[in-house]
Image (cartoon, rainbow, N blue to C red):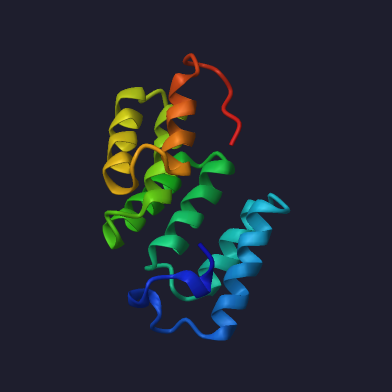
Length: 139
């Protein structure tokens, strides 16, 4: 979800500069895989209370291997928006990586309740759960 597509309740403080910086952080994560730089970019936005921002900070910490900080940020994102599907998906992958398959299954059920079993996030987490434990995840 890009900045312009965010629900109106996120619109406060989301100027054109914010949107440009948000897109830059997104590219740093998904195009360059520079997770440490992305954390700095996301924190510099000044809106880490937004679920999408907090989720991406959590994702970046997870990709850097800092599971404790990652968990803090995922939980922060879900506190801000308990129906933030992408956080449920990424946090579910976190659960799998930590060996918590039952918790990941719970995350999958939350996603299914929010957006149905055919949404991309549900299919992705379900596919990860179908892999045998110890299998490297590709996502």
